[in-house]
Amino acid sequence: MAIYDHKYGELPYFRVFRAWGGKEYQEYVRIKRNRDAAYRKAVEIDEKLAQRQRAYFTRQAYTIEYHLRKDGRIRGLRRVTVNRKGRAPTDVLELRINIPWEEKIHRTTLSIDIHGLENCFLMAVNKICEWYGLDKNSDVRKAMLNSMPLYLQTSPPEKPARAPRKKVKEAVSAIAEPEESLEPEAAKSSTESKQTDQDSSVDKAAKDSDVQDKPEGGTLKRAQDELSQFKDGLFRAIKKFRES
Image (tube, rainbow, N blue to C red; front, side, top):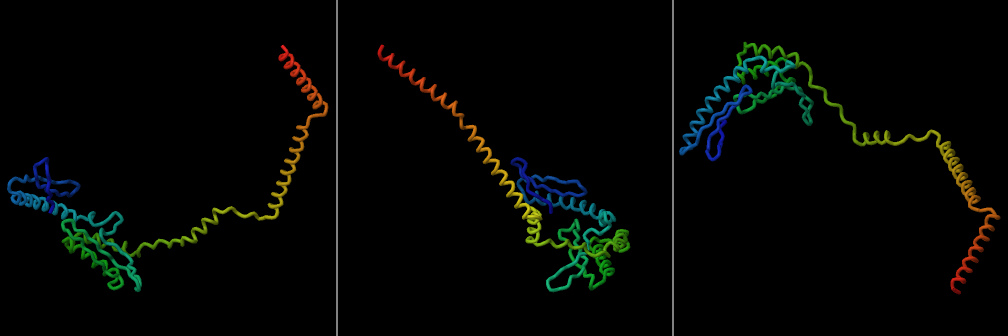
């Protein structure tokens, strides 16, 4: 049933809606004084739309394209391996059929180990025809039976087990860490030699600086004489200023 309460402004309605074939179909029933009468009218409209919808899906159900996928497999039928605790793995044909005009989904599994693949596949196709109401001599059934070679293959191989996280971390760490020198003693000797050269260069630069900072003896005496003369002149100028 596809009937919904709907309001257009302050006016109440019943909205009847269904969709099929990529199109939407809807009608509105105005609710006036008698709500039950309006609902009965909406139900009548819904039943008519439901008939049209089912007719469309029924026509689709009688076509080969509706039941076979692009890869040739039957829609809703697959072969899987069932793994149960304490039991050996077993291959089954799993059916999951959604009939468009029915509310429930049809499900069942057929054991290949018990019935054999050919018999199991035939039972699955007959189930599909029964649920859809297809004739056993229809072209759709024949096309489905012709797809049996695709189900001779076993289930897709399982994905390879993932490596433990600890081993992955160790591998990443090994890549990230720098490689150790093959000649540690030679590297150590080279480092010490470089350090000695640097120390020698620093000592030499310090000595040169000391030599440059020490002025020659004559220059120092000349500077001291000039400073003494400046002081004497300054004192004489102060004394003369006070006397005046």
